[in-house]
Length: 169
Image (cartoon, rainbow, N blue to C red; front, top):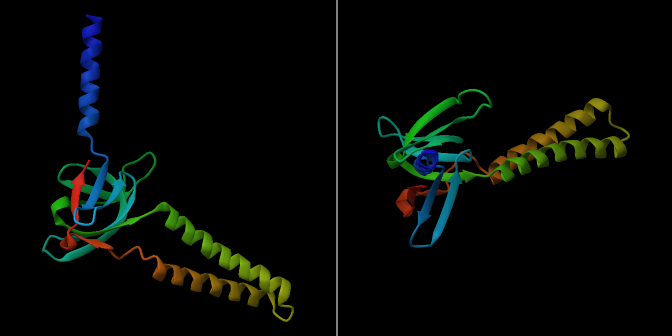
Protein backbone atom coordinates (compact mmCIF):
# COMPACT_ATOMS: atom_id res chain seq x y z
CA UNK A 1 0.00 0.00 0.00
CA UNK A 2 2.84 2.37 0.89
CA UNK A 3 4.59 1.68 -2.41
CA UNK A 4 1.43 2.44 -4.36
CA UNK A 5 1.01 5.76 -2.53
CA UNK A 6 4.66 6.62 -3.21
CA UNK A 7 4.35 5.80 -6.94
CA UNK A 8 1.14 7.84 -7.25
CA UNK A 9 2.75 10.83 -5.55
CA UNK A 10 5.76 10.64 -7.91
CA UNK A 11 3.43 10.56 -10.92
CA UNK A 12 1.52 13.59 -9.63
CA UNK A 13 4.75 15.51 -9.03
CA UNK A 14 6.00 14.62 -12.52
CA UNK A 15 2.73 15.74 -14.12
CA UNK A 16 2.73 18.99 -12.13
CA UNK A 17 6.29 19.89 -13.10
CA UNK A 18 5.60 19.03 -16.72
CA UNK A 19 2.58 21.35 -16.82
CA UNK A 20 4.54 24.38 -15.61
CA UNK A 21 6.09 26.44 -18.38
CA UNK A 22 9.34 28.15 -17.52
CA UNK A 23 10.74 29.77 -20.66
CA UNK A 24 9.96 31.45 -23.96
CA UNK A 25 11.96 30.52 -27.02
CA UNK A 26 12.01 32.90 -29.96
CA UNK A 27 13.45 31.21 -33.03
CA UNK A 28 13.99 31.91 -36.71
CA UNK A 29 14.17 28.67 -38.71
CA UNK A 30 15.61 30.22 -41.89
CA UNK A 31 18.73 31.58 -40.19
CA UNK A 32 18.94 28.97 -37.44
CA UNK A 33 18.86 31.56 -34.66
CA UNK A 34 17.17 31.13 -31.29
CA UNK A 35 16.81 33.29 -28.18
CA UNK A 36 15.62 31.69 -24.93
CA UNK A 37 14.27 33.84 -22.10
CA UNK A 38 13.58 32.07 -18.82
CA UNK A 39 10.99 32.93 -16.21
CA UNK A 40 12.41 35.80 -14.18
CA UNK A 41 14.38 37.20 -17.12
CA UNK A 42 13.95 40.75 -18.37
CA UNK A 43 12.32 41.32 -21.71
CA UNK A 44 11.12 44.17 -23.93
CA UNK A 45 8.03 43.25 -25.93
CA UNK A 46 6.20 45.00 -28.73
CA UNK A 47 2.64 43.75 -29.06
CA UNK A 48 -0.79 44.59 -30.42
CA UNK A 49 -2.90 46.21 -27.74
CA UNK A 50 -6.63 46.22 -27.10
CA UNK A 51 -7.45 48.42 -30.08
CA UNK A 52 -4.78 46.79 -32.31
CA UNK A 53 -2.33 49.63 -31.62
CA UNK A 54 1.33 48.76 -31.07
CA UNK A 55 2.48 48.96 -27.45
CA UNK A 56 5.88 48.50 -25.85
CA UNK A 57 6.43 46.91 -22.44
CA UNK A 58 9.73 46.25 -20.72
CA UNK A 59 9.71 44.22 -17.50
CA UNK A 60 10.49 40.85 -15.90
CA UNK A 61 8.68 37.64 -16.85
CA UNK A 62 6.58 36.67 -13.83
CA UNK A 63 4.56 33.79 -15.29
CA UNK A 64 4.28 31.87 -18.58
CA UNK A 65 1.52 29.61 -19.86
CA UNK A 66 0.52 28.25 -23.26
CA UNK A 67 -1.37 31.33 -24.42
CA UNK A 68 0.01 34.31 -22.48
CA UNK A 69 2.84 35.68 -20.42
CA UNK A 70 2.71 37.95 -17.38
CA UNK A 71 5.23 40.76 -17.11
CA UNK A 72 5.76 42.62 -13.85
CA UNK A 73 8.09 43.69 -11.08
CA UNK A 74 8.67 40.70 -8.77
CA UNK A 75 8.68 41.32 -5.01
CA UNK A 76 10.28 38.89 -2.56
CA UNK A 77 7.42 37.92 -0.21
CA UNK A 78 4.46 39.44 -2.03
CA UNK A 79 2.60 39.36 -5.30
CA UNK A 80 4.30 41.11 -8.23
CA UNK A 81 3.52 44.78 -8.91
CA UNK A 82 2.57 46.46 -12.17
CA UNK A 83 1.69 43.19 -13.88
CA UNK A 84 0.56 43.08 -17.47
CA UNK A 85 -0.84 40.01 -19.22
CA UNK A 86 0.14 39.75 -22.89
CA UNK A 87 -1.19 37.12 -25.25
CA UNK A 88 1.55 35.32 -27.13
CA UNK A 89 -0.25 35.63 -30.45
CA UNK A 90 -0.24 39.45 -30.07
CA UNK A 91 3.56 39.72 -29.79
CA UNK A 92 5.12 41.46 -32.82
CA UNK A 93 8.69 42.06 -31.61
CA UNK A 94 11.08 41.49 -28.72
CA UNK A 95 14.47 42.23 -27.20
CA UNK A 96 16.17 40.25 -24.45
CA UNK A 97 17.61 42.49 -21.75
CA UNK A 98 20.44 40.75 -19.94
CA UNK A 99 21.46 41.36 -16.36
CA UNK A 100 25.04 41.81 -17.50
CA UNK A 101 24.08 44.80 -19.65
CA UNK A 102 22.26 46.43 -16.74
CA UNK A 103 25.21 45.85 -14.40
CA UNK A 104 27.68 47.11 -17.00
CA UNK A 105 25.70 50.32 -17.48
CA UNK A 106 25.57 50.99 -13.76
CA UNK A 107 29.24 50.18 -13.21
CA UNK A 108 30.37 52.39 -16.09
CA UNK A 109 28.22 55.30 -14.90
CA UNK A 110 29.48 55.09 -11.32
CA UNK A 111 33.05 54.58 -12.55
CA UNK A 112 32.93 57.62 -14.82
CA UNK A 113 31.43 59.79 -12.09
CA UNK A 114 33.88 58.77 -9.36
CA UNK A 115 36.84 58.65 -11.73
CA UNK A 116 36.17 62.19 -12.93
CA UNK A 117 35.74 63.43 -9.38
CA UNK A 118 39.01 61.94 -8.09
CA UNK A 119 40.94 62.97 -11.21
CA UNK A 120 39.76 66.56 -10.87
CA UNK A 121 40.40 66.54 -7.13
CA UNK A 122 43.98 65.37 -7.56
CA UNK A 123 44.88 67.43 -10.65
CA UNK A 124 42.49 70.41 -10.64
CA UNK A 125 44.15 72.72 -8.12
CA UNK A 126 42.34 75.82 -9.31
CA UNK A 127 38.83 74.28 -8.98
CA UNK A 128 36.62 74.41 -5.90
CA UNK A 129 35.04 71.29 -4.41
CA UNK A 130 31.65 72.37 -5.77
CA UNK A 131 33.10 72.51 -9.27
CA UNK A 132 34.62 69.03 -8.78
CA UNK A 133 31.18 67.67 -7.88
CA UNK A 134 29.42 69.47 -10.75
CA UNK A 135 31.93 68.31 -13.37
CA UNK A 136 31.88 64.71 -12.13
CA UNK A 137 28.07 64.70 -12.06
CA UNK A 138 28.06 66.04 -15.62
CA UNK A 139 30.47 63.31 -16.71
CA UNK A 140 28.22 60.69 -15.08
CA UNK A 141 25.12 62.04 -16.82
CA UNK A 142 26.84 62.14 -20.21
CA UNK A 143 28.03 58.57 -19.68
CA UNK A 144 24.52 57.43 -18.71
CA UNK A 145 22.91 59.09 -21.73
CA UNK A 146 25.57 57.65 -24.06
CA UNK A 147 25.04 54.15 -22.64
CA UNK A 148 21.26 54.44 -23.12
CA UNK A 149 21.89 55.24 -26.79
CA UNK A 150 24.43 52.43 -27.22
CA UNK A 151 22.43 49.79 -25.30
CA UNK A 152 18.73 50.67 -25.75
CA UNK A 153 16.19 48.91 -23.54
CA UNK A 154 13.01 50.34 -25.00
CA UNK A 155 13.54 49.29 -28.60
CA UNK A 156 12.81 45.89 -30.10
CA UNK A 157 15.60 44.09 -31.92
CA UNK A 158 13.74 41.21 -33.57
CA UNK A 159 10.27 41.23 -35.17
CA UNK A 160 7.87 38.42 -35.98
CA UNK A 161 7.30 39.83 -39.47
CA UNK A 162 10.95 38.96 -40.21
CA UNK A 163 10.28 35.26 -39.63
CA UNK A 164 10.67 34.97 -35.84
CA UNK A 165 8.38 32.43 -34.19
CA UNK A 166 7.52 31.89 -30.52
CA UNK A 167 7.52 28.62 -28.59
CA UNK A 168 6.67 28.09 -24.92
CA UNK A 169 8.69 25.43 -23.09
